[in-house]
Image (cartoon, rainbow over all chains, first blue to last red; front, side, top):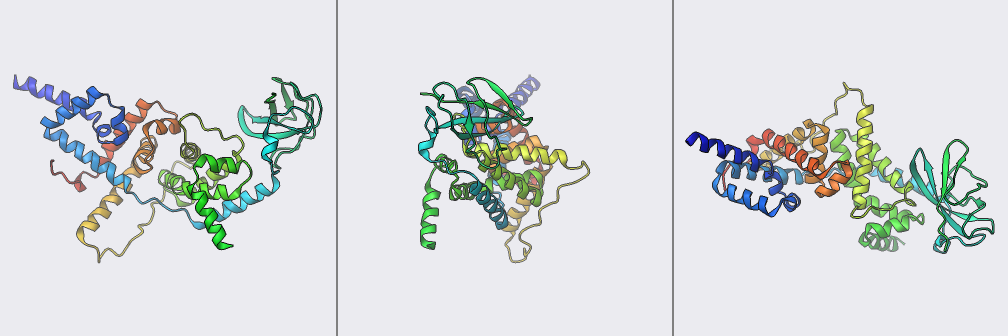
Length: 176
Length: 198
């Protein structure tokens, strides 16, 4: 009889311990159901071994939280800013007024540049043709230097065109 | 001039990430600088503890922030996602790439202890430092999939759902990995923990 009680106790300990770390974690506790909360609380009240385990886990969590956050070397910021300044200088300044949907010649359309199935960047291009109501017939590059030079590309809505052998351009013309 | 710069920086520091990202899309470098200042320790710290290598962590942090800059026109956070989640997702991918490139026999170099003059410290401070060192070593010894969840949750304070997003794992997997990581850490540092029952 005692042996059966012992087995039952060990089983309930095992079940509680699977959630014990979450119970002691502010975010993890949120994920536990109210019933699980109640069950663990009840079990801890009567089981000193699990209480000790819960306390130890809380101490581990607190100790890792107190790890010093390593500071990157100052040279990293300098290198990054130098690179970013150089790239910003070669990129066009896009005025907020240019960001509205293209409707006529000289206005801006948004084009997603995709490579190998991934969106590389979304850029704003200025149209040079008049037929822009639902279709863009040609575009002029107003893109950063990081985009390969594209003098004029014929685009149709929802139509994919291969440009050279590097990029596929999808138009994403937001017409009014 | 310097006062103006300091004031601008102070103002940038108060802006939410989304506002700074919107300014970055207009090629605003100070906005990038403010975001770097805000997230540098999280990105570098995660890379440093995942790779165990200072130089690799620096390279990974640099690449992470450059990718952020280059994605300034395409950055569209998914619902509930934060910029920190986005950055740590990139960092994690770069860490995995680094681990794949590293020859199997290469062991990560341990970081030198920052303090060496222990003589003047009282015993409890020494014990706490020793515990921290053991814990760091235990963390380094964890399999990468357990180490990353422990770092993201307990050192970085990311939520479970954010960790699921970063690692691309279901929430249940995050929960069980976190449990496994904490149990291993708890076993390693058992001798240092206060066993007194409450």
